[in-house]
Image (cartoon, rainbow, N blue to C red):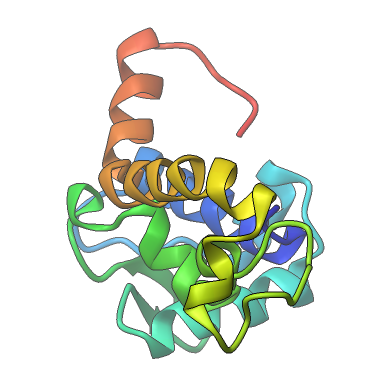
Length: 147
């Protein structure tokens, strides 16, 4: 449904929210090691999120990343929109192009009739769930969870 790239971005953002400390940056090496993700690839993802002002990025030996907003203000939808785009919520889930350019045909598509409500609910859930929700849940459990 969402790409591995997007999943990596979400996991990294949750990690950032769980481990954030005021005025401290977290290096890409630490994040990639802790999450067992490829460092250079994760670095590109994080730079993309920084470019869209969800993360702050500082280069250099004491550099790293920090959240640019409060974790409670960053939804899963925000991350998906930046990394994958919103096609996953808007395009046909099975790739049938019957109603692509004609919304009237959507009324005739048996899959669209049944899946539309599910996609809208999924979109709503991604918009409502924040990185802060995940971080709070992890902190509340007070145990290390595999992010």
